[in-house]
Each structure stands twice: as structure tokens, then as C-alpha cells.
Length: 128
Picture 1: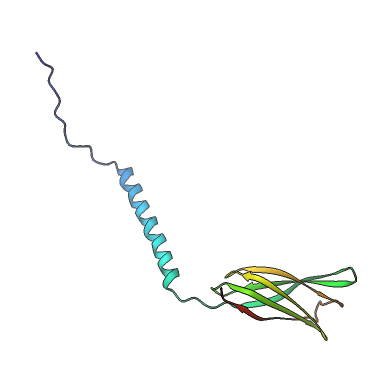
Picture 2: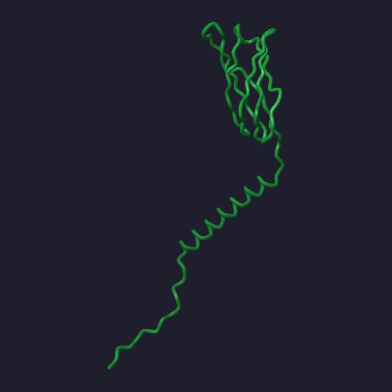
């Protein structure tokens, strides 16, 4: 006598944990797509740059002024020019770029102590 074969039945239903992980994965994908879409379509503020004196120290008969340039805008600024005036003396430097919502540091040199008397400005930059 031949052994009786089992009839294949319907496959088992997916476990609750599988459904939960599938739903979580779908939510994460949708959230990432929403963020990318909002960033791509939403308005972007231009670069907004400001320079502040962070510190000053003497070195080899000159004064080194460490200047922080902050960009509070939504766009990157390239070829950023920084100018410092101390009396009749002017010192300049150029940063390659300052990222959106980022900060970069540059050092300007002066003959006298720049603390409290230096006038810092960012006269220009380009948009990459």
C-alpha cells in the first residue's frame, strides 16, 4: 500500500511583526520623500553673511585677528571676500566658500591691536 500524500494547503498568513515592519518601512520612505520634495520646491533664502572678530593675538610684531564668517542663509556662498579696516589700514582675505547655515574662520593681520576698533565687512561673494 502506498503512503498517503498530504495535500498542500494555503500558505500561512503573514505574522503581525511582518506587517508592522512593512508599515514602518513604508512610513520612513514616505517621510524621506516628503522632506526631499519640500526642500526641492520650497523657497530658499539667499546667502546672508556676517563677520565677527573672535580673537586677536600678537605674533612677530603684528596682530592676528581671527574672524568668524557666518552664513545664516539657505544658499552656499563662494569666493567670499572679507575686509577689515583699522584706522587707515585695510586687511582682506577670501574664503573658497561658506556653506548654508555654516561658519568658517579666516585670519587678518594688522599693525595695531584690532580689539574693539576693527570694522569688519563682507563686501561680496558669488553663488556657485
